[in-house]
Amino acid sequence: MPEFSCLPPLSLYIHIPWCVRKCPYCDFNSHAVKHEIPESQYIDCLLNDLEQQLPGIWGRRLSSIFIGGGTPSLFSAEGIHRLLSGIRARMQTVATMEITLEANPGTFEQEKFNGFYEAGINRLSIGIQSFDSDKLKRLGRIHDGREAIQAIETARKAGFENINLDLMFALPEQTIEQGLADLQTAIQLQPSHISWYQLTIEPNTYFYTHPPVTPDDELSFECQLQGQALLASAGYAQYEISAYARNGQQCKHNLNYWEFGDYLAIGAGAHGKISRADDQSIHRYWQVRKPEDYMDATLRTAGKEILSEKDRVFEFMLNALRLKQGFDLELFENHTGLSRKLIEADCATAIDSGLLTQQGNRLHATDRGYLFLNELINMFS
Ligand SMILES: C[S@@+](CC[C@H](N)C(=O)[O-])C[C@H]1O[C@@H](n2cnc3c(N)ncnc32)[C@H](O)[C@@H]1O
Ligand code: SF4
Image (cartoon, rainbow, N blue to C red):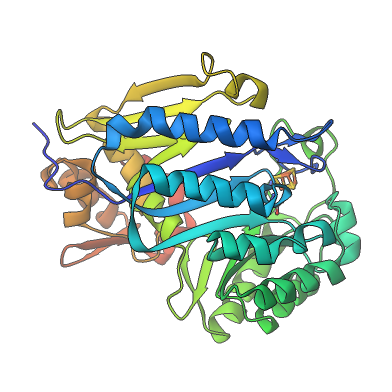
């Protein structure tokens, strides 16, 4: 019978599902605002949702909050303040809790950065994507390169020291030089963190049915290699497939996902995972995607399941092997409630095939394993 020696850290993810308009590459649960956002009603629902989930995490402290979207910066600073105060009134938190808000560049949002900071947001994740105005237009973004730079300057003036910039490469008709120029501009702005994603064409997006011409695999890979070298030389250490941090300022919230920690989820389409000490089980649940349905408490939860031993192993590997440093076997036991013996044989096979390496109790993907990560992860399915 598996046993947790102690429960993993607990985070809270909050999903805000509205955007000014839908970007052609985006498959996130985000909806273009038709009339007005029902902000106040939605915040009431979020707090009510949280309250319903409290019996499952009684006595545990929150270690991070991430308000993602969609475009959470469309909410007013007063709304974010009410949301955070409502959470604090209902739950205990660690003393220095990371609280991230995703923000899009644009004059309308920047006016609110001071208020977000005062509300208690201490990490801003700004969706830049590119500094090249032509590429931004091609991506259907509503901001240009100048506004992207301004957003970072405004965030600093508001007091934010912990800033992440989201950038993408392999954009339609992008050359390696253009991809690297975006990265160079980001580096010059010295954010604490850069998330650098390769644009993927996802099913259920406009780009899927109307595919743009994007760089081929070889060109994209070359851009990635050169970009990684540029980031490393500027002091941004890669710690996950797309995540790079300066001075160890990694995203605590995302690290908790990758280390198979626990997270409550509130908001339309949000997914949660909670371990329970009483019966040693791990639960997953997900909320209904449509904002109107979510706001009807009777329709709110779309599904839930209890993870089997097999699920625990696979999901742990799916997350932890994304980390450059991999994982410690003790963390595996603490966060899955399973014995390390259960994965010994598969780890040995992966090590023999040159995809995984072990030093003491720590296992991580080799350079080759990182290149063929899906193959490595599937060895644990
Ligand atoms: C939740 S999304 C959007 C956050 C914010 N609304 C924005 O648009 O900037 C977080 C990040 O995922 C990345 N992303 C979204 N769709 C992607 C795609 N199809 N391929 C690669 N990265 C993508 C973008 O960099 C985006 O900033
Ligand atoms: S990329 Fe961001 S702004 Fe664009 S639709 Fe998706 S969540 Fe909204």
